Image (cartoon, rainbow, N blue to C red; front, top):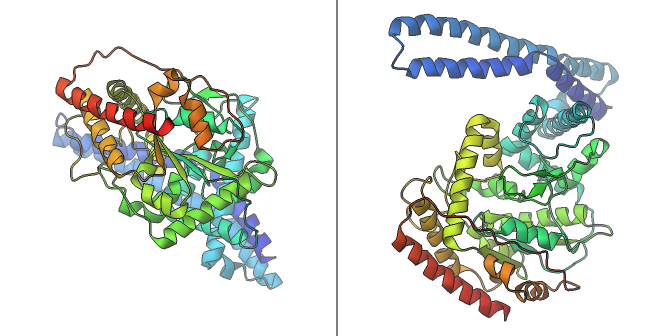
Length: 480
């Protein structure tokens, strides 16, 4: 009775908030605060007019704040009713709500309900729900993502609840060593991962696991009633790769951010890290949960991950899974640098137009490019110059692959993307190394080349080319 009353009250709380003026008041509060900050910073507005304008804005801020407070008070009515009913029936609803487990359960129920409500609303508004993953989420979906991904406490609580629910579950049958695909962004990591995933031999996290990626099994059970399919849409990169809800993606990074983000995420860079024994055990348990939910009982249970940030923790992956196989793609440096430069400029524009997209990328620790770009740094200093120049990305390419060729464990294999496209022997050799049950047909990797029009340092490019040749030699030796 206690749980039922608390759950119903939580749903009522969310329903009232979503039907109230709260979304409009929050948007108004943010908009007014931004306008006020602009007025304060402006050198073209006199102090006299600043005083008058800021007085008007303060009135708006007060009204928005009062509206938000009133909405929260009204939304708390179901919780109060649940407590009163509990007192009348002998159920300790108040004690449960105020306890840490109770707060965690209520939070998950509220977020799950908000997400389901948002999804159902999206299906009704589009007629078929065929838009696929999108960045222009409505208020409910944005609130759900902000609480599920933006709060480490909620994310960690969801992980603990999921693991507790699996405490009595037996081990997942072994299906072969996990495979990790990791490299510098735009090296062909996504294309390679998808080619492997299409073999049907692997299971991975997908967009359907968002936003509760640390509790994929629990979230799938909660959201099963609103499951929808969608036609694949080109992803935000504008590179021709289409995504839908079942597309595998680098979502496991949320685990590392929540449990040890302070050791590798800095304000201006991402740095190498080593997980401790407890974190390694947690990661094993996390992967086991993914394998159980995505592969079992009759599907593939061999884990496949594409996560570029994993190049910062290769030794930790080896500690968690001593038999793991790691693929590190690399690409012709000047073409690679040009692709990174284009994506940086593209996502900087996207982030400026949609601030939520910047926060979303931050929650997933996707700092490869865009307004919140934070480069991989393996030494003492970040690459010099502007990310709007080719030289910046060439220097980053050199720093990253120099560190990898010097420190990558023996279980890592370098994969030249140009060789995948041009040498028909590479793909079968790769599949054989991964012990795939049958030679998987070559998916037809396509080499994309664009004219380099931006200026660049010829000497820096020559250094990158020399390293590229060394990587090709090492890769060629591994596949022959």
